[in-house]
Amino acid sequence: MKYYYPVYPPFIPYYYRPFPAISPNTFIESAKTIPPYLKDLTSLAEKISSDRQYSEQLMNAAQESDQQKVDSLIQGLNLEHSIKTTYTPDGVRFEISSTRCRVSMSLRWR
Image 1 (cartoon, rainbow, N blue to C red):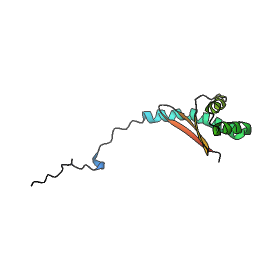
Image 2 (cartoon, helix red, strand yellow):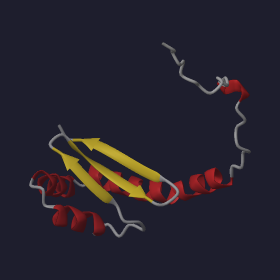
Image 3 (spheres, rainbow, N blue to C red):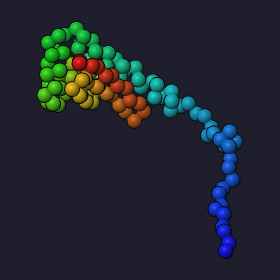
Image 4 (tube, one colour):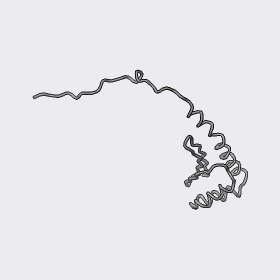
């Protein structure tokens, strides 16, 4: 009876594997798209922190799962970018994304 040993490819340590050539162009362009997004999220955070009535309306709409009202409250701020909002019983998450980057802000209310 013959026993056949499995044939494995030769082991090549990771330090011998060549890395692709580095070109930071996409990385730099991604970083350039972030400041306007941060400006919008900062404006939203300032509105929430300074306007108690607005904060209550936003929380009530989110806790009632009224996505349309949440979206209309955020759109009422006339921000440059559209903000995707998701919420849980403990808080809310605001996210702005593009093909190059994603910026999010999470706030707790409980």
